[in-house]
Image 1 (tube, each protein chain N blue to C red):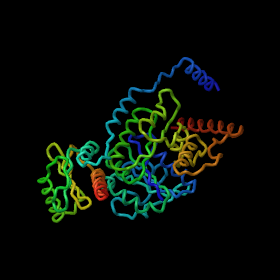
Image 2 (image 1 turned 180 degrees about the horizontal axis):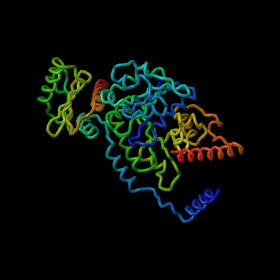
Image 3 (image 1 turned 90 degrees about the vertical axis):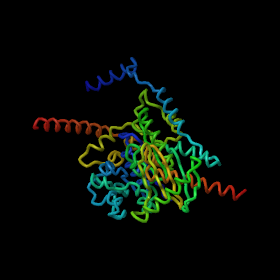
Image 4 (image 1 turned 180 degrees about the vertical axis):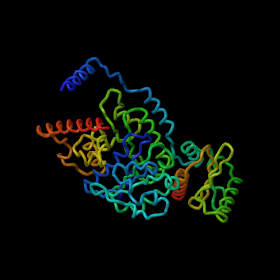
Length: 158
Length: 275
């Protein structure tokens, strides 16, 4: 009983004397808002190069190259990726025939990672400062694939 | 049509596991077919909360390809089904979390809701839990460190193509320094699905001889009611008015509970004296 009265007094004192000195940290909220604003990406455009530039920022990678199963370059964020394209395809074929069918091949180079990822009949070559999981690589590939399907539909419509 | 939802937060200790268990139970009590999955393959806290830590076949065995997913499904409280995760460190080191999505899809069609309890952090196991779901519910406390982590989780889930649908605000105490739900909604650009007050009954539900989720132990406590409201919002089901009111204790019940507390306190005292 006495402890309850004491608690009541403390509560009344706290509210009258404003002993609770907590306050909403608006400065931190502004910082978080700023952080979030840097992670908004426009993937609705119709230009492949713009899309690749946005995807590089979104997935935190340095370059993206897509190669057909025949070894032809489909698209590259660096503009020129013919050598990389043929080497990647040959490497994947070699691993497939000699070792195991790869879901992805990760190469830790000096200063960056090279990731080869077969998806939907194409090979994706991604270079990044750190390795991406298969889930992330697949998500990246899906975004490029859906863009390609969308642009083909637009072209067929026009 | 099944809804596969991952409950994630980034930060640990914000109540993901408690919310997953109780939300699943609330949905099951509304007659939905619910499967809970302990997708925290490293820690397996949901398994502990549901008292299923010693299940013979676990998600580890399924992800290792050593067991069929149907054999890892157990009956839980209020008619939920549950896939526990294992406690073994050896099998954790061997599992491939990326198989989770394929495993879930094998059984999802038998349910109305599949809820996955994601681990904390933004590592590979978290991504696997996020990628396995169609929708993501983000749990946060109303303070900036917790919100910062949930922001990162939102960005990661968008990056891997999952769809964050809303926020659950947990441990609300109504203190001056708490960030308001409006501010959090504005920042995260997501609606609030649940406002769950701080409730001592949730803590107590872990402190029993047999651990039991708060919705089973104290279905009329403030947190239980908030979780039921959240389940109704998520499913579109209607709650009866009686389910939303805290149960009032009569005079004798309150008097009895005081004596019960005193009795327990004296028992602890005797135990301490004998030690």
